[in-house]
Length: 464
Ligand SMILES: [Zn+2]
Image (cartoon, rainbow, N blue to C red):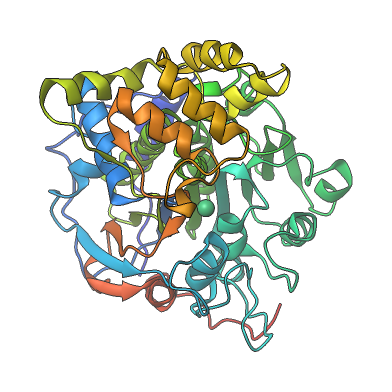
C-alpha cells in the first residue's frame, strides 16, 4: 500500500527547483539519510522516461561526452550500479513490422497489445481499449505528459489517446487528449493545440513561454498545459529563450503532480533524439541525449530520498545505430568537436532554404553550424546528394541527411547505419519499489500489465 510522502525530501526538491531557473544542477546523493528501499512494496508514483529512438550507441556517446565535458558519468550510467536496479532487454516489433515505429511502440506500453505501425490506441481488430494514463486518472492518480515533440506526437499519444485515424491525425489526437483532462501537459504543437482545442479541457492554466512556466508559483491547484513551439520544440543546439529545457519541464511537472496524495503517473519523452538519429545529425543527437539525461537526473533527484516512486528510463526502439568509430587520438579529438557544434541540421536546412544553395553557401553554413571546413571532395559529395543523386550504395543511408552525416563523420568520428529505426532489442533501466518484479527479458507490450499491477490500477475499460 502507498505510504505518506516524506515532507523533507519534497521540500528539498522544491528548493532545488527554485534555484534552477537558469540552469539545472543535480546535487550529489545525500547518501546517509536515504531510507532503505523495500523491493516488495508497490510504487505510489511512476516516472517513465523515454529517449525516443535511442540506440545503445546514443546512450554510449552521450555518456562519453558527459565524461569529457563534466568529469562525471551520465545519470543513466550511474543508475546501473545502484542497489535494487533492474535492467531489462526489451523487444520492440509491432504487429506488422520487425522494425517498429513510435506509435505502435507507445501503444504497446499504453494498452498492452501489439498493434500495427502508425496506430494510436487502436488494435488490429479495431478496438480502442482504455490507455494506461486514463486508467491512472480513473484510479485517482495525477497524470502528466512531458515531451520535446508536439504533444500530439506518437509517444505521448500512445499512453493517453485513442484514434482510428493513426498518428498522422495530430489534430484529432490533440482534441482527444485535451478532452480527457490530464493534469499536466508540457511540450510543443501550438499548431494543433489552438485556442479552440485548448478550450476542450477544463480548469487548465495555459502557458506559452519558458518564463511563464518557471514563474508559475506553487499555489495553483488547477491543471497545467504548456505549449512552447508551433511545432516540435527546437533541438537543444537551437533552443530559443522562449523554450524550456526537458529538465525544466520535468521539474515543474513533478512538482505539480506530486501534490496529489494518491500519487501520479507521468511519461517524459526526449523526442528529438529520434529526429536527430533519423537525420544522422551527430551533434543534434548527442546534445539532445545529454538534455534527456538532465531530465532523468531531475526524476532521480525527486525519487532518491523517498521510497514510493518507481523511475524507469528506456527508449521505444533503436534508430540509425550511431557509434564513435575512429581509433586513438584522432578519434577522441574528432569526437570532442561535437561539443563545439552550434546548430542542428534542421537549422542548417533553414539557412540553405533561403539561398540559391551554391556550394560555397553550403560550405559556409556547414562550417557555421559544426565548425567543420569541408574539403572540396566532401563538398562535391554533399552537392551531388543535394541534387538528388544516390551517393552511398545502401539506399536507406541516402535518406534524410545520411550523406551529410557520413561526410561529417570524417570530422567527428560518429557514423550511422541508416536513416531508419532499427530492430535492436533495447535497454530498460528501472529503480524504486517494484523494479525487481520487472522481467529481465520482455516485449514492450509486456510492460503494460507490470505497470498496471504495480500501480494497482483498475482493469481497463474495453473502450473510452
Ligand atoms: Zn522515428
